[in-house]
Amino acid sequence: MCDMQPRKADHRTPVLLTVFLGGVLLVAAIFSPPVFFVVLWFIQSHPGSAMSAVLSGSEFPGYFNRVAMLAAFVGLVPLLRSLHLRWRELSGGLGAARGGCQLVLGFLVALAGIIVMGLVCFAAHASKLKPDPAWTAIAKPLASGFTVGTLEEMLFRGGLLGILTHSVGARRALWWTTGIFALLHFLKPPVPGFIPADQVTWTSGFVVIPELFRGFGQWNHFIGEFIMLVAVGWVLGRARQMSGGLWLGIGIHAGWVAGMKYFGQIVLVTRRINENELAPWMIRNTCRSIVSPIVGIVPVAAVMLTGITALLIVCHRRRVAEEKAVAGR
Image 1 (spheres, rainbow, N blue to C red):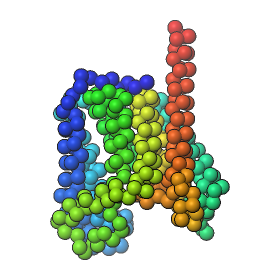
Image 2: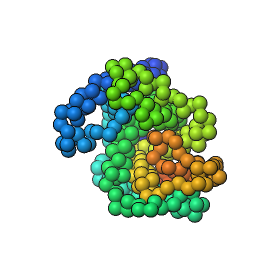
Image 3: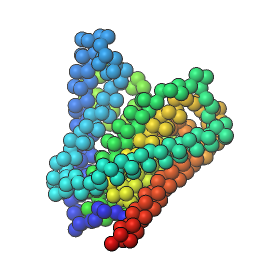
Image 4: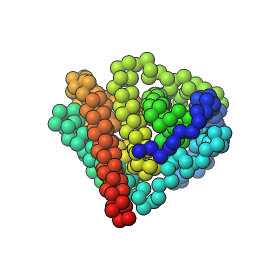
């Protein structure tokens, strides 16, 4: 069930979304160099400080990505106002008690799917444990999972899906949002060392933009990685539509990211993956937006099965609650 009902078609929406996405790239190109220079100045002025340790190590394209994300969230406010929409209409406004249960459910089911996928990878000799796996290093994967899950669900399944639903209807909005999510995540960040720190200039942001699209010329990666992103986007979109809020999608998204990051930090891919012996079932991942070291049919199946499982559980719980409400009258 989808609680976001379409209004009268607003033909401005595609134009406004195009301007919005183009504006995000433009803002990132203009403002990422000054942000980089300020951070670099701080690190050089405060060597050895805790903040400098946190800020150091990121290359210029990383600043481009962060400025783009911030620009997207800031730009979402005037975009919603121009379309006469309120955030509550897009997010669903599901209460914390019910939403918290959905978040935990989504997280646990997603983790279970990652565990099953990992066991399949071990059984197929696609991966092996590192000589000294970081078994206890769970804080960073968890923090990354919930940060990425919350921000992206608010932006894509809250803002983008909600806006498109009010314009073109729930079914078309789901596929449009899934496609945009997959395309944007398939953009390839520049390779490490693309722009050395001492060569960053005020126009370096505009050099990054064309580099983002180089992955569309690599069809072998496009097929394996893009299908994975489509599967992720579709499951998360349906989670928003069927659960009545963003909580379930945040839980699933966080579980996938945390589980994949943890899996990636304790295992190594084997020769079978590096030499494409298991393609198309399992392929080495080259897309930074996908945190799993392996993509292909097996990871896609894990994504779809865990997502569908979470959706079925939520639908069953809702049906039981409705039956109890009817019986109590």
